[in-house]
Image 1 (cartoon, rainbow, N blue to C red):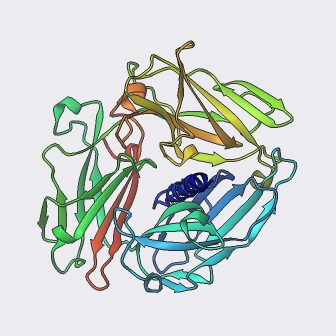
Image 2: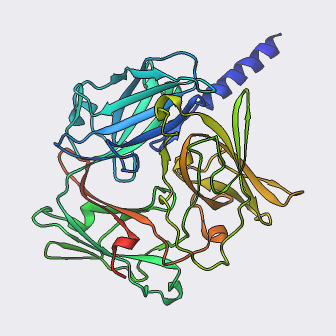
Image 3: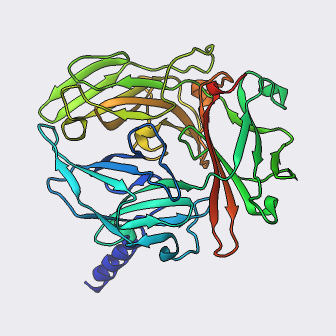
Length: 424
């Protein structure tokens, strides 16, 4: 009996040690939470970026598959340029309450399964932001300890004090990348911004589309001339061009739109089976309009997308030989750009196909297939999707300056651009 009690205590201790670890990323920790949207008000496709000292607002929305409403709370955490928690106290960057409540919710109507839809306009009257930089929005029940957190979201508060000039040349510095990779030529003008140590106290981050796994983080200027930071690396700042995103439309379950093979309806809801996909790495580039990995939650015109939009299991099939020593993932905003057990694909050796399923609300979705080699954290789209210089990609450049007193990373430069905007 004593031995059994000891084993039970050891098991409980192990389970407690394995309790969820909250990270400063876009992550959902509660299986009941779906379709978390966090964007500038008025545009689902806008990134979660606001300007310091303005009336800019962000809209947070999410669905809880519970059968009752909860009083969710939230707080914000200031972070460094590489998403480590700052040494600042919360009252140094928050004006007002250090936490607040999400009390705006509606129950779904005629949706299977039922859910509760929550919304928040942020910043609100009770919580203002005093400093620029990277932030984490943390949503939880009762208190902000890790076991109570249901999801986290990144957002940005900017002070637009620098001008960022960019170009993507046709011929990269490394000629073998021609017609494949996209090289970012970068120059930043910072008039009267830095008093000293501009190279040491500045960091640049470059993000492609919504991905963080392949972001360039902590780039340093190679030289400083007058008020200009130059980034003249030997082989350039290079990203894989990738390919246009695949996509599908499930705004309605009443008809099969392009790329949908079958829609199955039963008492438990819907299953949507997409047409089989195939690798594109050996095919020529084809221009196709996409959302660069984003999604738009939208039901039929006669439906309220917030509370009448319904969910479906969407099945993805990819016909190709199994890739050794690597996993294949479905990647895009539809899964928060994460590599996890929810979006990893399982290989069916009998059918010689990869298969995966995601639980998604009515709307329009982009996605790519991404290979993650064993032991790596950066995915590669090239083995399945190909690599093309012409690909339409969104890039975001963030410029941080490390203040001395108090010591924190100010976000003093920001530019988001699309490769099609630049003259080639």
